[in-house]
Image (tube, rainbow, N blue to C red; front, side, top):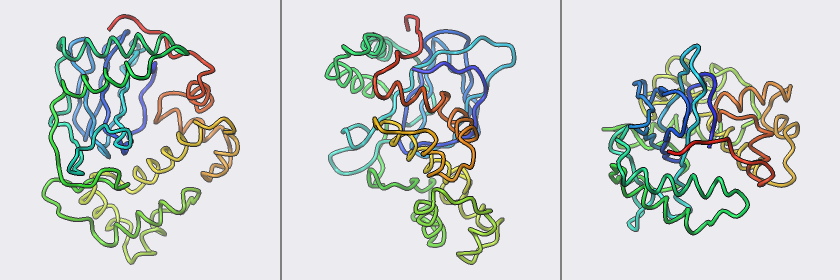
Length: 270
């Protein structure tokens, strides 16, 4: 559960997720370059590796929302055939079939330490059943963006570039230098990346850094300063701003919530 008070940076996640308003002002998210309203009557759906960003209206009250990430490793967003789930639309009406399981999830999260994991799991599956979904043949958990519609495979040079980025999360090379490693000019690198993934190279690299960060912050021994250093940030404050712009919360707050040492953001009835 998040409280958003300012616009965020465009980013992506490897997991598909649902966004539902809990309280506050209506909001607006750009999903793959198109605006969608987050209201009491409409939820927003974001596919794996789909670029999106929150756009805050100047002077508007904060918006409280529930963000539901679907992890294929937990059986969500992956099918028995090994295909991956995709949302068939970027928004959906909040019907009773959506509202009811969402209210259960919020109630369990508000119980905090006594949250019933089985109840949450069942409610997540009911929420997913209510969403417009389809399946494709990209392997679940492949660690790379699914090809854009009509693309059968990723360009070999883009694949090599992705592997380099994954192995060098702490690097601060100019993208011109990264492209040169694989025989690409900076404009050509951007063109191939956008053609293959709909993401910019920087957005993909930052997504890898963020996923590494949230995994580390879920550990008891996590240190924001050490994490900033491991990801190539010379100043922990710069890392905090980077994390907040994408996650909507400071890394120290995320760490506390992941360990169960702080309560989620205040909410109202969905």
